[in-house]
Amino acid sequence: MSDMITRLRERRSNVWEQAKGLADKAAEENRAFSAEEQGTWDALNEELDKLDQRIKSAIDTAQRSKDADAAFDRLTGGKGNGGGGQGGGQRGQGGAQPGQAPQDQSELRAWMRGEGGGRFFDVKPSGPIDFRSLTKGSPTAGGNTVPTSFYDRLIAHLIQTSAILQSGATVLNTDSGEALQVPKTTAHSSGAIVSEGGTIGTSEPAFGQITLGAYKYGALIQVSRELLDDTGVDLEGYLAMQAGRALGNAFGAHAITGNGTGQPRGVVTDATTGVTGGTGVTGAFTADNVIDLFFSVIAPYRRSQAAVWMMADSSIAALRKLKDSTGQYLWQPGLQAGAPDMILGKPVIMDPNVAAVGLSNKSLVFGDMSQYFVRLAGGGIRFERSDEFAFNSDMVTFRALMRADGALVDLTGAVKVFAGAAS
Image (cartoon, rainbow, N blue to C red):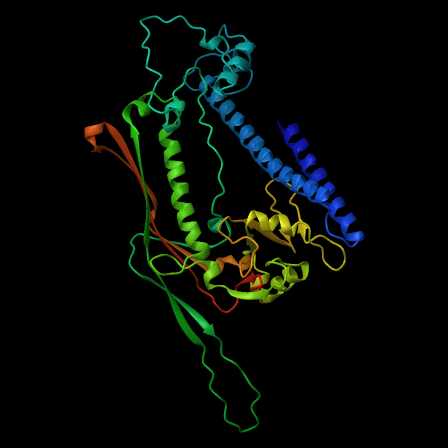
C-alpha cells in the first residue's frame, strides 16, 4: 500500500510538472493558451484533483487495514511466537490457535478487512436458516444497503464541504445559548513628542464589542424499522455522520457570506476589500493582484500561523497559472503527506461557499482566520433518536441539532478580500 501511495504522489508531481511546462511555453511566447492547450491544461488540473482523492483514499484504506490487523491481534491474543494473551491459553507460532495453519490467519485477516469470501463463509448451519426479504422499498431510499452478499461497507458519495472550521477559526464552546459579548479594541493609544515642560496630550484606546447568539440548525431523518434491522452496514453511524455534515455545511455557508440578519455574519461580509481587480477582465485577478492582496493584510496578521487563503475550486485552477515577476509560480503544491498547497508561503483552503471569479465577486479571501469567532452553544451537535415519534408508521426518527453563530471580531484589517471590478 505504501508503494502505491508513493507512486501516486510521484504521478501527482509529474502531472504538475506537465502543467507548469504548458504554462511556461505560453508565457515564453507571450500568448494565451490555444484551445487545444486549454483543454490539456483543464485535463491536467482535473487529474491533479483526482490524484488528491486517490491518495487520500489509499491512506484511508491503509489505515483500515491496520485497524483490522490490530483487531485480529486482539482476537488471537497478540502477535509474536508463542505469545499467550491474558486468559487465552497456549498459542502456536504467530499467535495462532492450536491446529490453526498460518494461511488460516491470513484468510481470517482478509475476511476481517472485507477482502473477499474465503472458506470462513463456507460453513454448514447447525439449525434452520432465517431468510430475510431483500426488497426494502425504493433501492435509492435505503434498500441498496441490504446485503445480497458479504460486503459490510457503505459507499458514500463525496461532496464539497465547508472548510471554515478547518481554517483556524476560533471556536467558543458554551453550555447555554444566551447572548455572548466579545469585547474588542478598535483603536490603540498614540504617542507624540512633548517639549520640555509641555502638556502631555491624552490618547486612550477605543473599545467595541461583538455579540454572538446561537442560531439553531436542524435536520430530521426518518428510516423504516425494517431497513435498520436488516441493513448490513452501520447505517445509524452513517446517518449521524452525514447529518452532522449537513448542519456543518448549512452553518458554513453563513460563516462565509451570512448577512447577520437571522443568521451568522460571514467572514467575507465583515472583511474589508484589500484589492479591486481591473476592468474588462470579467472579475479575474492577476499575479500582481494576488501579491497586493497578501500585503494588504498588516504584518502581524499576515505572519500569523492562522493566516490562510480561502477560495472556490475554480479560483484555485486560475491561480495555478499565475507567476510572479521572477517567473516563479505563486501556487506551490504540497507534495508531502498532509502538507497543504501554498500561495506565497501560506496554506490554501478550498471552500465552495466563496464566490467564483466574476464581476464584483469577492473571489479570494486572505488573512488571519483566528479572528473569526465561531460560537457553539449546548455542547456542539446533538444527534438523537426516537422510536415513538412516528409510531403509527413504524418509522425510526433521527434528528440532528446545532446552535451556532459567527462573526469577524477584528474589522481593522485582519482579513482582506479581492473583489472583481464591476465591469
